[in-house]
Amino acid sequence: MYDYIIVGAGSAGCVLANRLSADPAVKVLLLEAGPSDWHPFIHMPAGIAKLVSRKGVNWNYNTAPVPALGGRRLWWPRGRVLGGSSSINAMCYIRGHAGDYDEWEQLGASGWNWNAVLPWFKASESNSRGGDVLHGGDGPLAVSDLRYTNPLSQVFLDATGEAGLPASNDFNGATQEGFGWYQVTQRNGSRCSAATAYLDPVRARPNLRVITRATATRLVYEGDRVSGVAYSVAGRGIFCEGASREVILSGGAINSPQLLMLSGIGPADQLRRLGIDLRVDLPGVGANLHDHLDVCTLRKCTQPITYDHTNDAWIALQYLFARRGPGTSNIAEAGGFLRSRLAEDERPDLQFHFVPAQLDDHGRHRLPGDGFTLHACALRPRSRGRLLLQSSNPLDPLRIEPEYLTDSEGYDLKMLLEGVRLSREIFAQPAFDAYRGDELFPGEEAVDETHLIQFIRDKAETIYHPVGTCRMGGSDDPQAVVDPELRVRGIAGLRVVDASVMPKLIGGNTNAPTMMIAERAADLMVKAQNQRGSV
Image 1 (tube, rainbow, N blue to C red):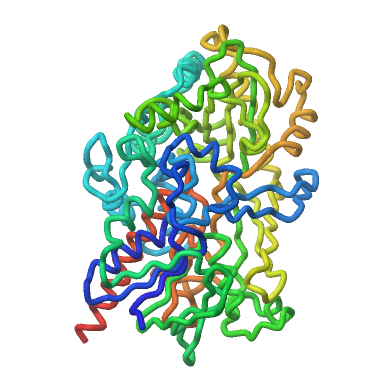
Image 2 (tube, rainbow, N blue to C red):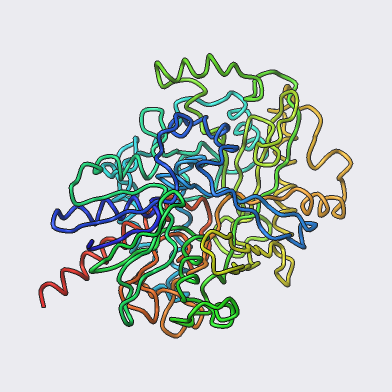
């Protein structure tokens, strides 16, 4: 019997395992469906380019056909390994805008405003620039400036200045808007995933047990309380473990709602149709799915200086012996946040990632020659999708219906058009004169809105930030799955702690906010237990 069982050793689960097991009297079990994070490509930052096709550490989801994107089925990679998506992402450390969290509170997430969450961002962070009023200096998660950047990334930043766009030295500082270098979750030139930061230092604790290749199949109940988890290991057998205090789901925006529904917690009509016994009718489980949709402007480069033109053996040697050189790059080195002409408040509504390489189909489609790419994503999408169970078999994938570009005002499409326009404007600046080759995407012939809209429908992809499928909210919100303390409504002994609880997508990458959520959740749980113990 354990005190806590955590399902999912990703960005949130590793944080929880560390914090909850800090008390030697508390027994914690951490279940992870994927393998250990032993592979060298996980720890070498530039290894992200090689991880794309490695199925062993990736759930490799595919969406249902997306009508607004020409019926395409989009590939949704999610980490299936210790560290979760923090072990396979581009390591950009972004918190979002302070106003994002104030909006959470307005939406019913009481106690999650910016002033309330900032201490938990700081508790997580160890910034190489040192701690200050906005940054942590001694947390578990290493946040650093890149050790190596491609010369074209500086050309890109020069071009943004020539275009009259603002500069930023810290996207997580007092002002988010501007262009500059991304800080990354790295320590001494190596990836610092949630597993590296939070799990590795405490694996020897006798009160913490970690089981890999363990896929949770359902929750176990005693009356109106969750009392444990059933799981299989490497597809063999079914095991059950009990939790005397709580079970915490940290499987992410896809897996957490799936396990809830498989266990009878979710939309009543959907569960009954599949013959699943209903425990709690929560229509919000699997609803409110939203994600950052991204579109790339890509040009050929006339100089052989991009990451398309590299010596892999030399890069590996530099990295192996010195933790220096291109092997320490996250590939998406520079970028920025911008308030477009459509911005409705002080928050940026577009994010850019510059890649000094040709990037098509998530890097799975290699193009000949040299080139450079500018990602543009709409930060505040209005379209909402859903997740649907297709069977009661836990090994069957969910049906993912992202419903991109379906908002009634056409706002999301307008934002991507604005992103393409600004990307082209940046690439047209004098700084790129010595490097600018032909435009591959959208293509020189795409000059009017009709052609650009078709390009977006043909080529837009996820930039890997799905959230909201177990949204947090108040007791008056019929779509809320968890309360502001992340307890699942209508059942005792169960919480959800991951990106699925975000009521609304933040303006930026979601890894750092997910760790913050887990830091605060662990504190809430420890305080709740202490209060019970003092009664």
